[in-house]
Length: 114
Image: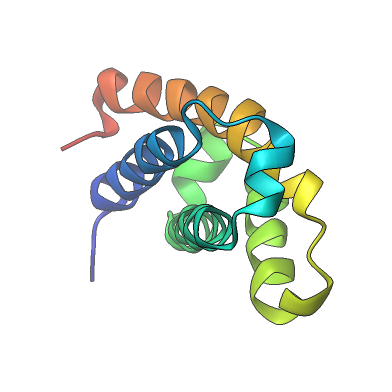
């Protein structure tokens, strides 16, 4: 079984990838680029999957992280792919992922990291 540390690292690495994928893009270019949209959505699902596998203890000790929302987003992305709202994906990529990365890095620095 993987440790919480590895799942936290997965979240940070996926957020880093998302930042690279959307760098220099605006929302319209993002929405018009199937390759970038697919890559970002994949990394957001990785974040959601990792968040789902983080222990209950860690989640409870960090209630400021919107664990339920992150996991719910992943479930929608995977199970309702054909109805994905790409503007919500854009917002998650450029606004939510960087904040989540910062917060997860803070958790890791506090002793829950590799």
